[in-house]
Structures are given as C-alpha cells and as structure tokens.
Image (cartoon, rainbow, N blue to C red; front, side, top):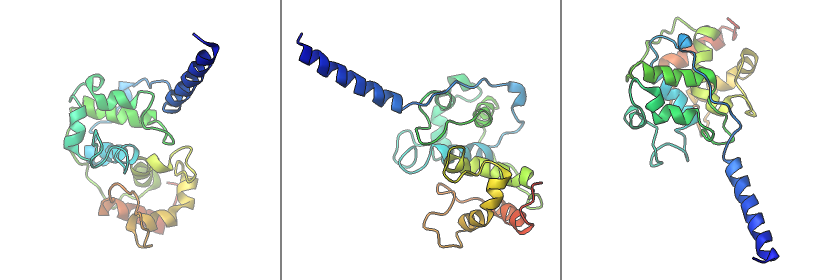
Length: 212
C-alpha cells in the first residue's frame, strides 16, 4: 500500500470522525430519582409542549419528518406505556445525539417528566388551568420551561431561564404569544398557547412581573 494512499485514507478517516463527533454532545445520561417524579403528569400541559419545543419543530420531527412527534398518536409509536426503559422516546432523550446542536440536551427535570409520564401509563390527559393563578413560580415559569426552553434555554442568545431574564423580556413575550405585534412567527412556533396560559402570563405582566 503506497504512502500516498495511506495519507489519503488517514485524512478521510479524520474527517469522518469530526463529522460523527459534531453530531453528538458531551453528556452523561441522567439518573432518575423516582421519588422526585410529580404526581399526575399531564400529556397536553407537560409532555407535548416539551417535545414540541425541543423535537417537533420545522425541519426536525414534525409533519412529514420521520418519526413525527406532533401528536399523541405519533408519540405513542415510540412509547411502551408503563415502561420507560423500553420506550424509544425516553431512551433517545438520554442518548448522545438528540436534540441535535445547537439545541441543548433535555435537563434532568425534563427527562424526569417524560420518564414519569411513561411510568404513569402515558395517558392522553390535560391538567386544569386556573387564570386566578398567575404567579411567576406557580404559572409563568412552568409555562416558559415547557414551551420555550427549546429555543430560549441555557446557551441561547435570548435565554429565558430565570426571573430576571423573563422579566426583562416580558413585554416581548406577551406580544409574541398574543401575536399582537404582527410577528411573522408567533411564539411558540409549534403550537399556540391556550387562552388560559396566555391570560396567566398577561396578568403576571400587568401586575408588574413580580418574582413571586
């Protein structure tokens, strides 16, 4: 085998390794503490927004993309109810390539929600929404976490990861979720928030965005 051929082979191998590595993140699979799993995890309010924000957006797992993760029926094709470890949805979330860069991996709280929902039987359920609850900790932060962190999480150019960041961006957030600004891409882009959730955020904003 010639030195020229060996050199070319080495270059190709090096490029291949770079491509493979670039598709992965550095990560350690999370360890789920089952005592921290919330009771009564809701698909429509907890799981679906999380998947839409991180996975089922344009060009990834939505519409004609395979697998499509836009609906309960589609998501259940990757789920074995009651058994997270046998569910591709969960095992992919703790792998080393999804969501792809520049998105961040799901954090421990998010992975725990998916694990817990599957463990609880993966029901197609909805939690009650109460517009009289509009505190930052009780309503606003949970909504932002589930629906926005796929684009505005840690590492984003416009992060919404704590009260100060969310408070500073509150006016723009209200404009985006109500689309009263004529925004060509209302937020979140995958699915409009319910009227109840929009009201909760708007009432918190109108109250002066307290850290409560």
